[in-house]
Image (cartoon, rainbow, N blue to C red; front, side, top):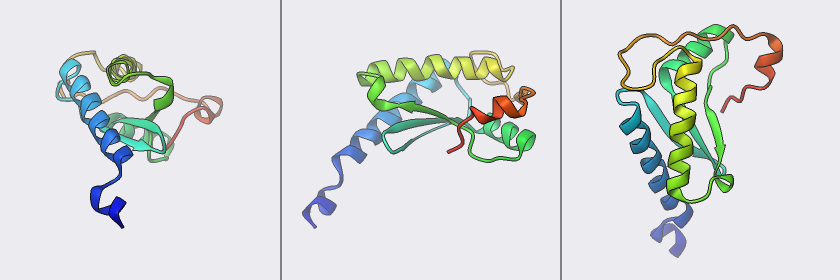
Length: 121
């Protein structure tokens, strides 16, 4: 019962790391609809417009990137990795790095083979 009253320290650490990653993404790519969370020990990064584009294209919800926390090092390194990934994700969907101007992402034409490697969370 005492642990419940004090809260789970892992959840607090994950919350702090989520905020740090979100701030880094917003600093580099402002106005984009980023959502940061955790699943197990992995950080999940979602861009809501891209996730919607993927769902409309292939009929599956939950598109996001899973970044394994234990493979990323310090919180500063995690934020750096997330920013690098965020930029790559924007480019992969035809969005420029930088501030979002509201344009729709362009979902790649994925065949069945490419879809097998995509993670949905």
